[in-house]
Amino acid sequence: MSQKEISGVTIDVDDSGYMTNFEEWSKEIATELAKENGIDELTPKHWEVIEYIQKEVKDGTTLSIRKVGKSGVVDIKEFYNLFPDGPLKKATLISGVPKPSGCV
Amino acid sequence: MAESKEKIKKVSVICAKGSLEDVYAALVMTNGARMEGIEANLFFTFFGLDAITKKKMNKLHTATVGNPAMAMPGGLPFPTLLGILPGVEAGVSAMMRKGMDDLDIPPVEEFLDMINAAGGKIYGCKLAVDMFKLKREDMYDDMDSIITIGEFYEKAAGGQIIFT
Image (tube, rainbow over all chains, first blue to last red; front, side):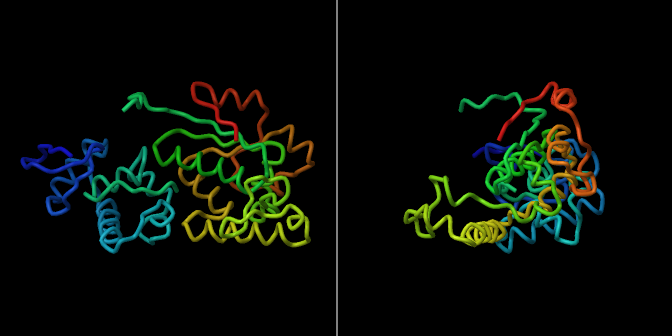
């Protein structure tokens, strides 16, 4: 457990950089986290995915790429395009939720 | 932790066997690579070709005979003689497929679709395709191409090779 300075505030993060206190999450922080992960701009579609992920995690769902692909928000190809090089890992990190534990 | 900081950049997985568990090992490893942002190739050869043969891909079996890890539900030993009865292997395999679906592990065809959508490349082995007299139309539509072993090594260059 550690802390990091981002967008003018201090947030709690785990060893992999995932936020551990969702209360601290904000759109400004998400935008900065996205930049740190190679996504220069969060488009409306990115935000739709982020909202979906946050809702699913709040409902206790174990997220998987398959579930995101069937969500009706994005298909799998689009998900990979929006969050290149590890979509589920990146999207959850930017959404301020824990790192997903599934293997598919 | 002893983990290396250096990331794996590319993997090429070879699937040479057609049983449910061997095919799934290859699918999970290839898809898992893409999930981590690793470039991935999946090469099917010999009986592994069943996984990209339309008529067989969604009906793969696990062996109930000659499989020492086979157990009854609940963990009791699975008698080999039971495994030879007609329908038993199909029943056990259907149970396993159902169990995987409950864990959000997709059927073979959908798994291939996921890998394809994720930018993973799917190849069939030319030698084995010729040997089994398969035609392109018998095989998974989104397979990238049928390639020789030489072409496989070209595509695998600079990455890791995994044989399941």
